[in-house]
Image (cartoon, rainbow, N blue to C red; front, side, top):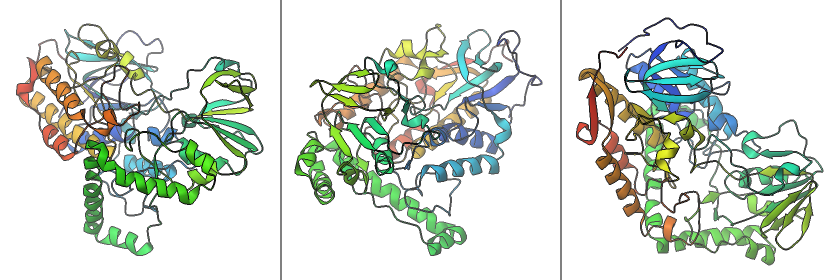
Amino acid sequence: MSTVTQTERPADPGHGGEPVAHLAVAIVGNGFSGLGTAIRLRQAGEDNFLIFERHDDVGGTWRDNSYPGCACDVPSHLYSFSFAPNPDWSRSFSAQPEIHAYLQRVSAEYGIDRFTRNRHEVLDASWDEGAQHWVVTTSQGVWTADVLVLGSGALSDPSFPDVPGLDSFEGPVFHSATWRHDLDLTGRRVAVIGTGASAIQFVPEIAPTVGNLTVFQRTPPWIMPRGDRAITRLEKLLFRYVPATQRVVREAIYWARETFVFGFKDPKRMAKAAKIAEAHMRRQVRDPELREKITPSYSMGCKRILMSNDYLPALDRDNVEVVTEKIVEIQPHAVVTADGTEHEVDTIIAGTGFAIGDLPISHRVHGRDGRTMADHWNGSPFAHNGTMIAGFPNAFTLLGPNTGLGHNSVVFMIESQIALVMDTLRHMRTHGVGAVEPTPAAQEAFVAEMQRKTEGTVWVDGGCSSWYLDKNGKNSALWPTFTMPFRRRVRRFRPEEHTITPLAATRH
């Protein structure tokens, strides 16, 4: 494959003028998506690529989210690269430090560190039609690239609650994704806004040490028991010296989780699972009034199903209060709810998730017509096969629209998309292709298929509103069925579904 076409120079501090270098592939983000793409490029013999990472380490969301209790809700043996198994996972569900360390180790073992440019935030990426390449402007300079891979993901930019007066609060305010490890919460009066996947992990960790904890709940989550356990020494030895055993475990976990789709496709089938969650709550919460507050009124699966063995007991503590009234204002020392109550607090922690429906990176990527991805999407993100977008040649978005999951491992989806990236690159080089993008017809057919397959599922008929549906009420986040069909449809590049432009003489 190609090599660097010009010597890389120190970055231009003015971000203008001549590019630092021309690349075959520019990758944005160094989490699972960016790292996995880089490894596959190296395995294919490509060495003319760079990963642009705005922070100073590999890991993506598993670097950023370091709040107390942070862990994965997909079993460890499945939430990892298929080509880089880890026989030393300590638990069936790994904690954040262990996943972060895994990604650091994989990056080092595959020699990806030298292809990474940390503290290089991508400020703009614009397609140059004449030159048939991308112009990528970072905080450290400008590069050009034949191909752009967006691996920044959906969980990269924290979303704060839109509440009047938040800026007037005089105490510490931070998001769970930017945890204040320097702040001692002992004895403090803490408000937690949100009861999603992050909050149910850090609330039990801080509840015993804070003075008072007020949890502001908009919609209660369905919570299932977390079947976590330590992995034994014998199991680790087997995984290390008989690798086939770990592959068998991985396959078993994968197929077991695929069966969850049957429940998501029919809300009535979730009734049995809901009974398990209700029994779990009865065992763990003594106060019947509290149980009534935190019992969901929508079908299980409509929102993300959460797993915890310690969140519900934490809510039952004497120093913890659950407030279900809507927050209407934040004052310098209090959170005010719709019933007029002023809840005095000195610290606010937002557990309110991420900007999923309006990804910040989509405002920085300009296509052939000069408009951004966000302009094209208009509130409803879309991409052909969740990966390529008409009007944005030679660009791939990993974990893009309709590739999120409610039941299985997104690493499976990432690896599937990377296979499509690699096969597309092979086709481009074999056939002298300068630019490739999906046809509008193929893209529209895919988007229509996603909406059709979402009809009747728990995500739209479950009686709730969630991040699964965008502001226009469309499913632009989830892949709405089994994951194996997705892998089959993206395992090879399909020329008939794309507009292909021959390589121009002006191309580098």
